[in-house]
Figure (cartoon, rainbow, N blue to C red):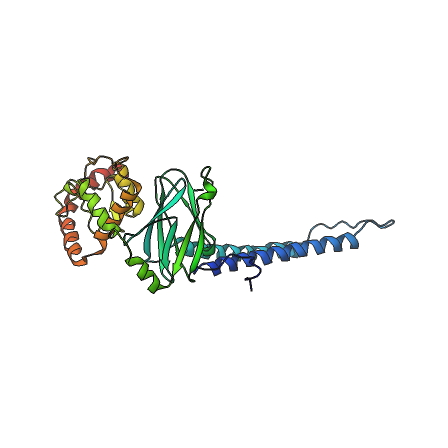
Length: 340
Ligand code: CUA
């Protein structure tokens, strides 16, 4: 229907229909109310116009009428809020087991790196029907990753990760825009999302790769000497990182945080910010020593050693549970009196 009259961009993601439905719902309510108000204005202007010899009758309010115009809009607005909240949470929550793609924005280009190792600039190839999670950061200023056909837009900030996701539903090539004014070439910071049939995508994937991102990360990890402290035998000066990702971490100051992408990133760049309980803040900062791409690779590596070899991890995860509580316990009771 919209082929010759494109009121809307393509609907090419699993969420696009929901966003459009909400938008159309808002349009209809707005149009209805606008029509109603205009009709009422015209009717009242004619019906109650000033006439010679007629004295206006004063009305002192009406409880049923006031209840009606309060209660009906209340339910209408709650419907808008609920529909909006549902679409928002769907759009904000990447499904488990999404395929991850790291995005680094800079003036004025998009650099994308697949978990399997393919790197792209201003282009992202994805298979149709797969959940894709974008883990994004910026090398300089604020940018915004905007794909109208997916009804998806997410700010990309320097110094932290933001996350977005989509599931493409239709093969094709779709516009990628930067939607945050970021400098003179902002309007040129454009690209394409190329959605392919799975078989086509497999063929594309097999052409040219530097190996998985996590393997690159492992190399960076050993080049920077991280392994001298973060040892898997728990005798290191830093916490063991195996099995860490996605788990809660107890900190020296009594807080508990989740080991997500931003936690790993912060711990590399600002190690003193969240010191793990039972450890000393002895780690130097790697601010300025690692590029955004290397950071992404390190995050991918830390993730990979939390996913693979479940059996090994459990055995090792059990060891610190036996040894640590004594240490952690002392500290907790020392601090406990002050904090609580
Ligand atoms: Cu990047 Cu606008």
